[in-house]
Every structure is written in C-alpha cells, then in structure tokens.
Image 1 (cartoon, rainbow, N blue to C red):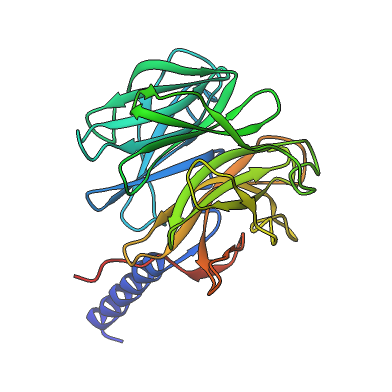
Image 2: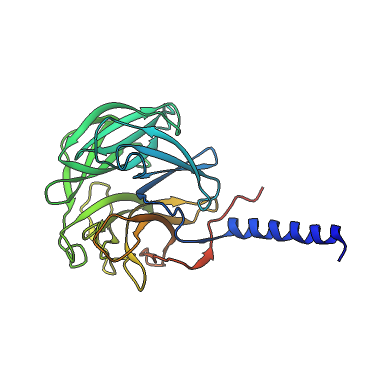
Amino acid sequence: MPFHHWLFLVALAVVAGVADAAETYCNPMIDQNLADPAVLRHDGTYYLYATGEVDGDNGYRVYTSADLVNWKRGPVVFRPGQRHVWAPDVWRDPASGRFYLYYTASMTVGVADANGPLGPFTVRKKLFDNAIDAHLFQDDDGRRWLYFVQLPGFRLTVQLMASPTEPAGEPSVVLQPESAWETRNGRVTEGPWMLKHGGRYYLLYSGSGADTPDYAVGYATSTSPRGPFTRADHNPILSRADGLFGPGHGCAIRDQGGRWWFVYHQKRTARREWDRFICIDPLRFDEQGRLHGRATRGERLPGPALRKD
C-alpha cells in the first residue's frame, strides 16, 4: 500500500475514534476518587463540581466539557479554610449574572459567589448549622427554593429564599428515612436535586449509607416545590447490580437535544469505604410521568445529544 494511502486510512481511523468518543459513553466517566457531582451548563460549556481531590476534601475543583462525556480537569475554585468540604451546587442567577456556590463545610451549609463559573468563589455567609447537601432550585415564577439535609436524622428540608443568600421564613422537612431501601444499610435520605416536568416537581434523592454498596437513588413528586411529596412506588430507580455498587448523590442535567441525564457517583467496590468515581446515565419519563433510570458500568452506550449547527 502506498504510504500516503496508509496515512489517509490512519486519519480516517482517528476521526472515527473521535466521533465514537463524542457519540457514546462508558462509565466510569471521570475515573478519579470524586463524588456528589453537580453540573451547570453556561454558554455552551458544562461545568462539573464534586467532592474530593482538593487536599482530600478541603475544597472544590471544576471540570469542563462540551458534550457531558469528555471532561477536562480545571482549576481549584473554592477553598473555605475548613475541612470536610462536600457536595457542591453552583447556580447562576439570571437577573444579576452572578454564580452562587452552595457548599457543605464541617457540617454547615453556606453560600459563596463569583463572577464566573471558574471562580474563585468567595464565602458570603453561613446559612445553616448541622446541615449538608444544599441545592438551589428556581421555579418558573422566579421563587427560589433551597433543598438541604438536616442533621441528625438525615431529614430532607426545603427553605424559601428571599435572595440567593437570604432565607425567607423557616425551613420545613419534606422527607426523612422511612422506606426499606432508605434504611437498608444506615438510615439516610440525602443529596436532594429538584427538576420540574409537566407541571410536577420531582425531588431526586439518595438513600442508605453513602459508604455502602446499598446506596441508591429514588424520587418523590409533588404539585408544589414545598411539598407534600409522595415517594415513587418503583423506588429506587438507580441501585446496585452485579459488579456495580452504591450509585447515588447526583444531579439532573439536560443535553443539547433536551434529553435528561443523571450525573452521579458509584463506589468502586462492595467494601464499606469512600473510593468512588463519576458516572452518567439517562433519565426518561414514561407516559404516566414516572421517572426511570438505570445505573451502568463498563457498557458502551449512546451518549448525550450534541447541537447540530
């Protein structure tokens, strides 16, 4: 074969490989000891923040992606000077354009802000003591709701916010560990994430002990962001399987085609420990409005949609 023909075939193979990488995925998506991911899309780029990697758990680093599959390691964006910095959530205020980071540090929930998604984020105030896992949801009417977990008891709680940094009124508990899957290996409901579909509110959350293989994801629905919430009768929607352990604590994000995905972590082994990695799998709604998902590991599957310009 002439040398230039060989080069042409090599080039085609490279292009095919790039196309395959962009159009499919295989978990682990980020194969590092990271957990509790939150993803924000801004100006065509996805930004991922997670627990871990920064001196163990003393801050957050950002990762960036154009397709929700291939991620580039970015800078450290937050160091509050405290230990046990977990479970970030970053939200952009459409009115001011500022970015707000809701963080957990030493069992308190606080808020920091920055001019852009790459930070650096500066602490503004502590919001709640004995609390973890905050997530900010803005409804279609502009009202903001902060979901978090009250300790002890791992009680999922909602707080109306007067502004991105100021609570309005008192928080109220919406769910606490009761179901068999939430109490199988520790009594836990945590990692709240809200999405709205068809006029209904879907509160995704994780249950059982996060350091155990029984950690799993379920959801509850309501006609109001304040509740009351009713658990889905087919919970959990992501759970352990053969060779797959402890899927949980993630976020729902739409791809460029409008399809929902869940970005979350899995445990590496069935041992009781904190060795985890980042994954992505699709979510879908059936005709009755029920939400479905499936955790995968090691399968190559169709990936998120890319915008076709």
